[in-house]
Amino acid sequence: MSTPSATQLGTEIKALALAKGFDEVGITGIDLSADEPRLLKWLQAGFHGELHYMERFGASRAQPAVIKPGTVRVISVRLNYWPGSAKPALDVLNNPQLGYVSRYALGQDYHRLMRNRLQRLADTIAERIGPFGHRVFVDSGPVLEKPLARNAGLGWIGKHTNLINQKAGSYFFLGELYTDLELPIDAPASEHCGSCTACIPACPTGAIVAPYQLDARRCISYLTIELQGSIPLELRKPMGNRIYGCDDCQLVCPWNKFARTTHIPGFEPRHALDSAELVILFAWTETEFVTNMEGSPIRRIGHARWLRNIAVALGNAPASAAIIAALKSRSDHPSDLVREHVAWALAQHEAHAATLS
Image (tube, rainbow, N blue to C red; front, top):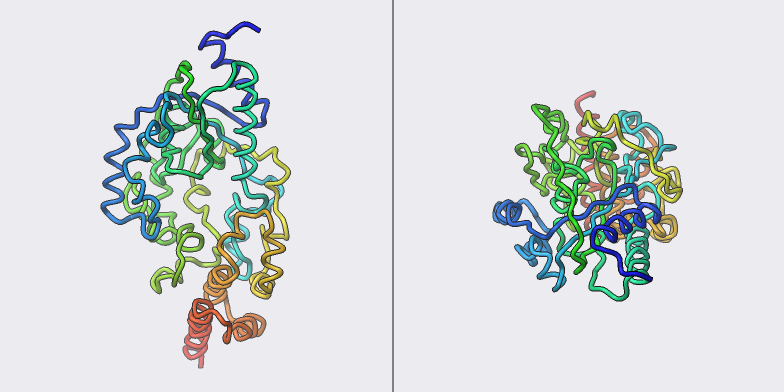
C-alpha cells in the first residue's frame, strides 16, 4: 500500500471521521497564543469557581504540545445531540411542576461514545499509515476545545461562550484527536454574532457578565452539576425548575433555527427526563437514581445533589399538597446538603402562605 501524501491523508481522515458517525471534522495547528491571555484573565477573575482543575493546569491548556508531546495538529470533531423526540424545551420551562434537564443530558453519556469513535478513527489511521503519536480527548483533559474547534473551522465562539456553527447552531458535542501528523490545516471560522446580544439577558442568573465572558459561579449548569455544596441563596429563585444544566442562552440564539437533530438513538430521552414531574423525580431512592441514571451524565452528581437541585425547583413551584408532602418526606434526609435545601424550599411556601393569610 502506497504512503499517502499529507493532503491525501488529511482528506482520507476527514472522510473516515464522517464514516465513524461524526457530523463534521476539521484540522488545525496548535497555536493558541491569542487565547492564552484570555484564559489566564478568566482564571484570575475567579470565574472558574470550584473548577480547580482549570487553575491547576492553567496556561498548559493553551499548549497542546505540553499536554501531549510531539503534537503538531489537532483533529477536531463535532456531533449533534439535539433530541428530536424531546418535549419542546420552552413548554417544560414554562411548567414549574416539571423538571428541566439540559437537552444534552436526556439520554446516553456522550463521553464514552465519542471517545470510542475517536479511538476507532485513530486505529483506522494507524492501519493505513502505521503507528503514529496521538491522544484522544472528549472533555477529559486540559484542552481548549472551543478555540481549537474554531481554528479548525467548525464554528465561532458566541457571546454566550458556546461554539456556534453557521449551518448547525450550537447543540453539539466536541472532541479532539491530538496528533503528530503534519496534516494540512483548515481555515478558522469567521464570527457571525454581529450586534445580537439575545443570549446575555436570557441568562436567568446573569452569568454572562459581558459579551464573551461567563462567570461560571453564577451559571446554572455549574450550580447544578459542578458545585459540590450549597447553592447560593440569591441564585435559587432564578434557577426556576432547571434541575440539571441550562439551555436558555442557546434557546434564544437565532442561529439555532439551523440546529440539526441527532442521529444517535442513545441521545433520545430516557425515563421521561424531557418532561418529568418534579415530585416523581424527587421520590427516587438512591438505588433508583443509580439504576435509572446508568450510562447517563447525570449519574456523576450523585443522589444528594440530585435531590438538592430538585428541592430548589420544588421551592420555586406553586404550592400544592403533593409538593409540600414531597419536601417533608426528605426533611430528615441523612445529608445536611439535602436537608438545608428542603428547609429552604418549605420556607418559601410558608412565606407565600403567610402573605395570603
